[in-house]
Each structure stands twice: as structure tokens, then as C-alpha cells.
Image (tube, helix red, strand yellow):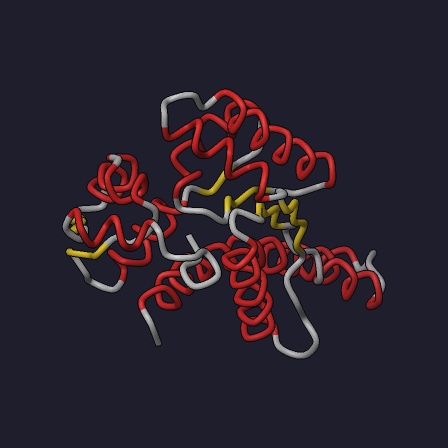
Length: 220
């Protein structure tokens, strides 16, 4: 398993547990009601047991990473719940051609258009019924807290989700790969530092090479 797949699975294991936790809680509560008051018919219990949280994904940045998120989420829900179960997902996939221009503007310090696009995507997911949002991009998680404050539903920060899993495995030093912005800005390093995790990145020459790798091969 390569580093990118391992990283994605650590994150998505936590996201899937958040999504299916509603199913487990609902099942326990409904069975208690049925036992004590005998008011719920068997088919109603079965229906309530299947209530799963809806995952909202801001994707398309790039589509390669979004496809990986979608695949892994569904595989993990099937593994956890068995049978024909799959993840309950809403995805808004941003058109990357225009968005890449906004990213270059953000690189130069002007985040206004990019944040507007992200906020619009988050609002669409909220209106669609998402219970929480994950941004399928390392770089754009630097704005996760701002998007959460603007849209009013939880945005699961990749660094928090990853930090929990890394610490749970007893690891203390990790390598960070991504866009040059992700590797050089403090938003990942500082967030993971709260979990007692040290972050190391490639040298400048290697960062430049990774940053120019086509996104079909490096899902950032």
C-alpha cells in the first residue's frame, strides 16, 4: 500500500465511523423503545436501524482525489455494516479548470474568489441535507474553520481526523506530501502538533517536483 492510500484510509476510517454512528445509536434507542412500550412494529425498527449520517464532500479539486474518497468511503461502510450497505454521500464536484485560476490567485495572497466558490459548494451540500462536510483536498482544508463558521454545519478538518488516527496507532513523526502550499504553510504542522505529532516535509527541490506532478497521479 502506498503512502497516499494509507493516508486516505486513516482519514476515511474516522469519517465513516462518524457517518455510521447515527445508525448504531438509532438502533439501540429504537430497540429499547420496542422492548419497554411495544409500540414499534418490526418493519419500523428495521427502517430506523438504517439511518446513517449523510456525508457531504466538496470534491473536484482534483477529481482524482475525489474518486478515491468516494471509493474508500463506500468500501469501508460495506465492511462495517455488511451486505449491500454503502455510504450515504452528497458530493459537489467543482469544475477544476476555472478553480485552478482561483488557486493561483490565492497563492499570490488573494483568497476572495476561491473562498466564495468553497462557500457556495458547502451551502449546496447543506441544502441537500449533508450532516457534515469533508473537503477532499489537503490545501483547501486550510480554510475549513472559515467554511464551517460561514455555513453552520461541521466541517471535518483532515488534520484533526488524521491526527486522531495517527496518535491511536502510536506514531509520533509523519511525512507530509501535497501541494507546495500544503507542505510549506503551518496549518497542517500546527494542527497535528496539538496531537503531539511532528511533521517532516521534503527539501525545497523535492517540494517543487511534487508540486508540479500532474494531479491524476498525485491526488492532493
